[in-house]
Structure formats: structure tokens, C-alpha cells
Image 1 (cartoon, rainbow, N blue to C red):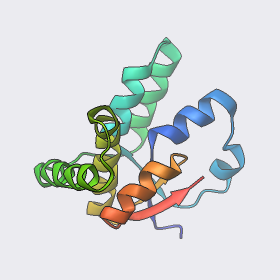
Image 2 (cartoon, rainbow, N blue to C red):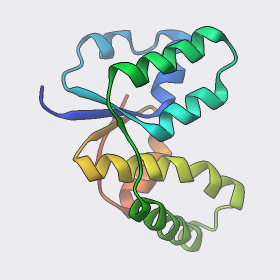
Image 3 (cartoon, rainbow, N blue to C red):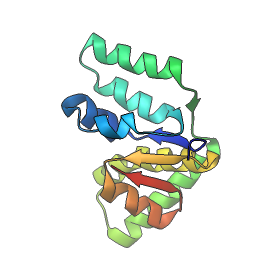
Length: 136
């Protein structure tokens, strides 16, 4: 377990920063932490304080950053089209899912585990394209 690669979804950071919800999980975590450029972008987009920006920049400095490939971008569009056909989600919901699909596909490239608190969306994505998932 100590050599597994971990990519945190944005939801884990947001939930933890707001409520310290995952303190025990973080203390007992085993694995190599890597960042998703998508997650870092989402965190920066939502930052409203200098400390939040500093937190994101510290993450980027301290852990290597994985970025979706061209293949991932194209595959994400196919996955979202399939979800649209199966579920009839609105364009807004598909747009919300898009970054999560990119996070999942990037993790899949490296055999990494995505850790999220966004169970429903990531389980939906996993049903379309398998990847390692852990829900907190």
C-alpha cells in the first residue's frame, strides 16, 4: 500500500479545509501523493483568500503534477457523450462532470487511486471507464 500512487479530488481538499473532516484519514495515509493539474486549477479557481492560493502553490511545489493527455481529453468527450445518451444529463451537469472524468482518466494513466468524497459522480465515471477509486 505504501507504494500506491494517490491523487486527491478537489472535493477532499474542500471538505477538509472547511471542516477538518479527514484529519484521521490524512494521518493514516500511505502512498505517494501526486497532484492533478485539473484539481489544482479547480482549487485556484475557487480560492478567495491568499492563504488558499498559498496552499495550492505548496501542493504544486511539494508533489509532482499529472496532466491529462490529448488522448484523455478526447476520451473524456466520448465518455460524457455516453453518459448523456444513457442518463440524459443536462449540458450543465455534463460540464460539471467533465473535470472529474479528466481526473479519473489521468489517474488511470498512472495506475493511481483517486480519493474523493464525491461518491456519486466518480462511481458513475468508474462504471464507464475503470480506474482505482477510494471514497472518503
